[in-house]
Image (cartoon, rainbow, N blue to C red):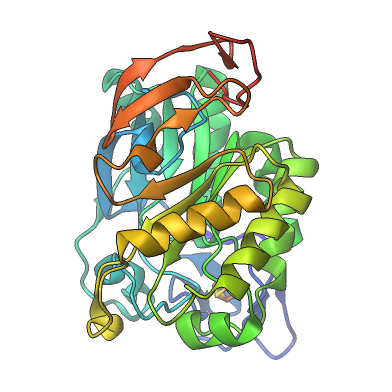
Length: 339
Ligand code: SF4
């Protein structure tokens, strides 16, 4: 447990958190919406500082990040809590945990220096904060990211993007990649699926990560039948990516599997994902990937100029790599790949 950053003490004994747009005004002995930032005697504490629930050395392709250090292994860490309440959360056991209430959870202590040391001894090229929302873990991810910089490891946020500008700018100098979900496009959709009122800060965060901080950005949309698979919503997402992040920003349209409160919704048909890919391409996006359909040709990177299969993937494995210095080896086209 560590005193939080980015909050204000109030005369009433309450604390006002500035990390995400909920802007929780937290009474003593209570925690914010994320359940991990708790007011104790008028001081806000990050209760999950150094608390880790999940650790793995993963292929970077699993995040998924397809244009960022391909084929590298990334030390992936998750903690507890989340600032969204998605109805289909695949990681609900950790994301919906309430550690501030003393709830028992499968977690242990791993301070930043130990995490970075483990990452290096596992042969990882970088560290990703993933599995649950890293923004609400900002004190820990900030200290860890600074250490990563010193040790030459890259740094990745796998995030829902629901952050304040101030929190993003605090992490900005120390983050290399921002793998952000765009779950839908409308306010109604975000409200119904995640509980937040307005997704505008999410869209602003991705643009700021890219434009102000020069992070490598990739977007994921989990396409849920009957929820966000209509042409209108997919076209809006694709056009937004094209206009705000650039035509070479990878967009991953991934298969949904029935889970949690959406257990009655069927898995996404492959044809729907192919339609989403087509919509992305028609909006001008050069790299639209189909996810969670192993062996689908939509997992590969095709050179937009000559059509060469620059990267062929089999699930998380790369079987062909025809790229040099981020460019297609056959024609020299820039594929916007960070190597
Ligand atoms: S990070 Fe947590 S406590 Fe802070 S505003 Fe967001 S939900 Fe509330």
